[in-house]
Image 1 (tube, helix red, strand yellow):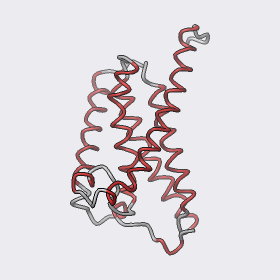
Image 2: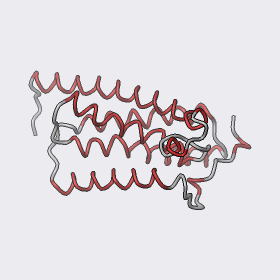
Image 3: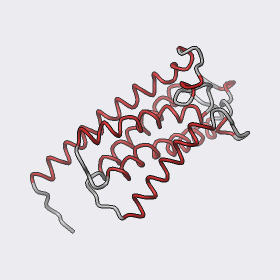
Image 4: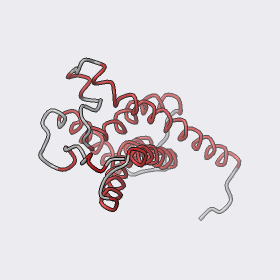
Length: 183
């Protein structure tokens, strides 16, 4: 295990922290706007693929996923080629989804309701976690199976987010949370 980092490694690490921070701010801002875009579009079917169409958890997960996926090619151009780009992109897109679901349903079970301020903090914190972890692994080498798995996960998520808005299963993720306890 290498204990001492070179100046180049320290510089890259600092760059990645700043890039993760700015990426998170962009994803949060874009996701926040996407909360309203469907209504602003006159309820466009095309816009419904990427924007929230109701107050369900599923629709709010799109607000974290699509902006993170959309900036990935831009990051690729700006950052250059990194060996871990595809797995890092999967982490940046998927980790926030899992954190949002776990933290939201965890705290609402404990408090027997949800609070808008907590929901917003969870959204932002989950995106920051995804961006920082994703940026942290960009320079790592991953085997072909990991890269293929990351690619498959992104394709699956893209397919699900593109279709399930229009064919919603009858499960908790697709129902609006009980608003009778909202503060």
